[in-house]
Length: 216
Image 1 (cartoon, rainbow, N blue to C red):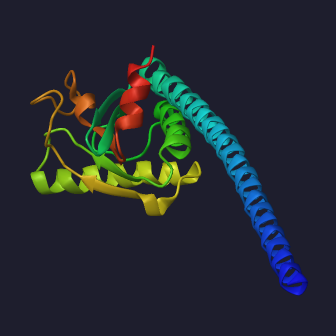
Image 2: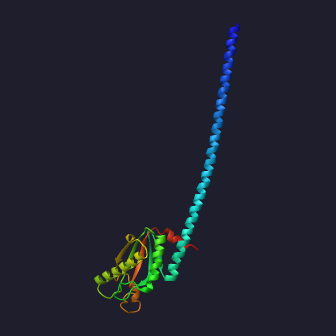
Image 3: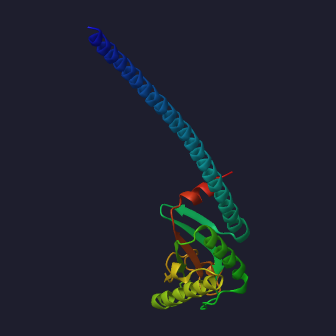
């Protein structure tokens, strides 16, 4: 009888100790889980803060770039009389770069404007394809004027390359006497020089240019 009671007490003690051990294990597990959740929450908060900081830096950089683009476009417009048109997928620059009658050489008085365009394009439109469009006045045959206007575009391309632009990103086209600024004006007639010109078409998303032009 005494032995039976001893066995029972031993079993009860073992059960009690086992229960205590189980409770301790569970308590430790819960504590570890609580610590882990707390750490995860802390890491998430820190990550969110870092993301907000990164977004803030990115926004500041974008604003700085837009401000710089606005300033450079403003210079092209006010100092060089450039007409800038931003459309879906491209930006057009109609610059007052003209040619002598029946000639394709870049004039000395136009070099400064072309240099500025090269700087702006290299800075803000790097990697974009740029088409130099050449035009002529209506004197002469259509075929001859296409060749002449293409030669004008090629001369401007060579000038831009000499200013550091990538020739692989510049292509040329001659439109001859199409799209006349002063219809019928040719040779030395008033307005004829406006027909002997080049324009630039930059194939790039126009959103940044539109935003820059609309900034106050």
